[in-house]
View 1: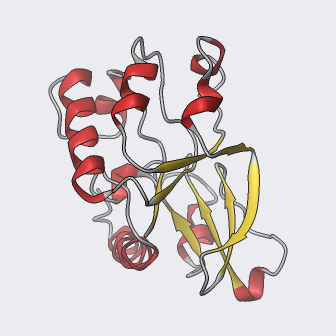
View 2 (view 1 turned 90 degrees about the vertical axis):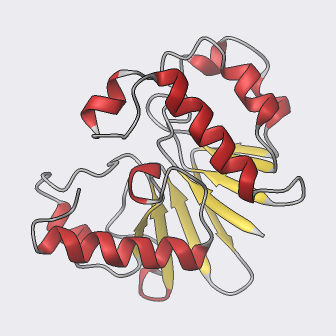
Length: 184
């Protein structure tokens, strides 16, 4: 099985307030996301992490050891600091800034940042992170209008890695709610 996730921000207390996450502490958030992850991902599954996995985390390596699956990291803007603290590469099947791939059924372009134009955009999907659940940005209407631009962020995907079909449905619902003013 293939899963997608982004913007977990393990260890980041302030993201709870910034994104209105339903946790009392960073520790509670981290444990919930680890349990959610391991409750669905097996050792043979692939998980694409579209950036910002940790932020100011003091236990990144310990968390990586606990997470199941073959992890493939697409580096985000907050990943640089934790990546200097230990040999992170041994926990990932690959580490990229950008990736064009396929899940066997469809072409996928993976990047931490949302893109509005990419190779084969008319017949492929752009999967991203970075924006969490923010619909206030000037570019949000452009993203919301594109059915093939999908946010893998945990804030709209139940704080867990999701399959492509779940990603598609969660984004459809989130975009629909954002147009009616009920995105959060």
